[in-house]
Structure formats: structure tokens, C-alpha cells
Length: 251
Image (tube, rainbow, N blue to C red; front, side):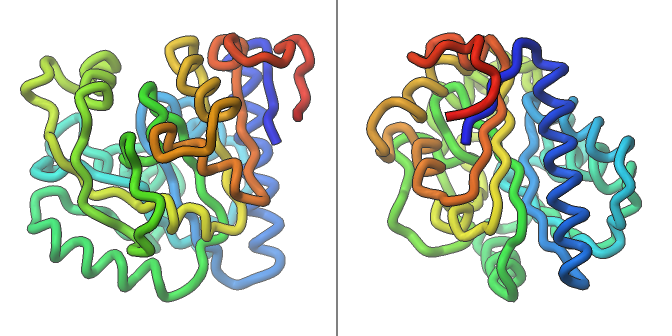
């Protein structure tokens, strides 16, 4: 399902409401809910709405995040572990979480996080779509075959340029060339996925992933193979889609 909104603020509020409803419903059904959360500029306002405006029992939520740069510690502003702490852990006082440590040997981190995430299904995931169509840090051509939950990936130039453009790094040379990322296969095992994609700069990637072939060259196209995914777009990110964006609901 795709939902299109005329403005970013409407989109992030609606996505946060949907996420809160899903979390509350899951918490009524089970003792512990497992959540996989995206980071990055596109998720900031969504997470602000979700973490401060909804009555959610965060003590019964176990948190994983999608990815982390290899070689980057939490002292760096671009660290996703830092981002998760500042934008989810600290606001909610959540106590069950698994932060990826970019300063350790990647193989050690992979062994540990793969063991942890394999212990039970993931109930809900928040994701975005990169300017190059990436899903988590699975840049094109993404590995659609591996069944490893997390893997070591190489970041392509378009992905690294996006990080500079968003202000996380001062220059391309500063952006790491590798990351630890959840795999496409692992994401597709999640019971429900919410994909939050604001801004005009994502429009070409959104069109390729939603209207082009389901292909490793458009990694987020894999979301179309998932039976319970909702994609939230604003007028900018939906601007190149064939469907009339004035119809705000879905197709």
C-alpha cells in the first residue's frame, strides 16, 4: 500500500500514528515486541512524533537498527548508534536494544547481531529509500539471495554522496566505504514494514522502485514482494509517479 500526502508534516504525522497503532496492537497480543528501526535524515521528524506523542510501553520493546558505518564510533555525528540513542533510546528510556558498534571488527559484530536477531521474528520495521534506491545500506546491485540477517556491504558513490548532501560528512573522502547492514532477505521476514520517504530528491528512486522492475538494481523494489508494507510519501517524493498524487490514499 502506498499513501501519498500533500506535505511532509502530514506524512510524518500519519506514519507516526500508524506506527504507534501497530506497536500498541502488538503489545496487547504479546509480552515483547521486536522492532527494527531506520536512521538518517528522512526519519528524524517521524521518530520525533512517534517517541513523544504516543502512549507506548517501550519497556516491552526490543530494538535493533538497520545499519552502521564500519570504522565510525558514537563520537561521530554520523554514527547511527548515536542517532538511535539520541532519537529513540533517550526519549523513550527503552532498555532492550542492540547497537551496532562500527569501531569493532565487523565479523565479530555480525556474529553477535545475527545470533540475537535470529532468536525470534521481528514484528515491525521502519525503513526508508535512498536516493540510489537502496534499502538499508544495500546499494545496487543489492544481494537478494543471501539469508544472512546482517552482512558487510560496500557503499557506492551515490550513497556516499547522499551522506555528504545531507550534512553528515564534510566531504566524500570522510564517508566510510563499508557498512554493516541488515539484509534484504531479513527485512522481508518482518511481519509489518513501514517505509517513510519524504522529499523531492527521492522522487526518481521512488519511481524506479515502485514502477520499475523488481530488481537488485532498485533494491527497495523488494518491498513489493512483502505482503504487509505501507509506503508513506509526500508530494515531492511521489512527484514522478504515474498515478495522480492528488489522490491521497493508496494503490
